[in-house]
Length: 293
Image (cartoon, rainbow, N blue to C red):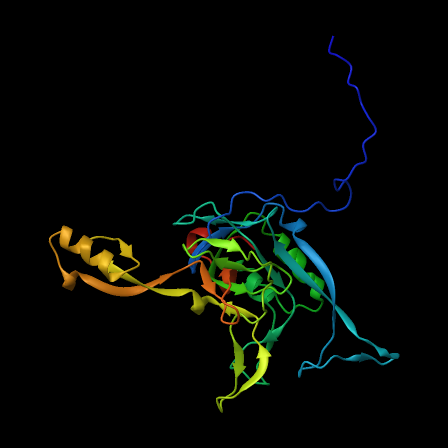
């Protein structure tokens, strides 16, 4: 018989209730920009969240409640959240099987040239349903009616253009280069500056002082050097030329092209910022992946 445990009264200091913090594991490789197929979760009906937002007019001004001028009007929007527990999965290609997280909402924005006040208001869920899911519905009269349209396609395969975005968060310790190319937390504990893309610059060349918090896909472009005698790409021309010469070629076989990196440098404070997956365009499905609906 096993020896009886000698238990003492010890105060519990570990978190035991509420939502536990995410368990940190190995970092998933970053899915670099491109066009790929993604499989939606089979339990897509569990990926929804409803949230109240302040209602605004076409100029972005908050509308106040006519019955109580001290309070803003609110409207409910729906968020389709593919998170770590319910991600989309890449199907085929270089990133096959990797999870992708994203949030698609019913919050509309103008779809046209910047500043065009007559451009129609359309939200991403509409594009997702009618383009990626090819679910051809008629006019939608109630915002909640989008939910069953999406839920009708559990496990569907969709085609998306995707890129990256990065933010220098002011509520987190920033990461910096330790001098060897390795990213480490700032040893001084400095947090991000919230100014990842520098300050807004007006047409006259003057800065208005407003921070631009995010960097987007174009900021992750990097030059690469291609050897036309092989399919390899290299970060420097010297590396590429060395390979070309080894294969019996020379400088004429080295061409400069465009590649992608998974991190960028904050223009405000020099922190290293990791890029995170971002949907850029909802595409019609390929014939072989055409869902019913």
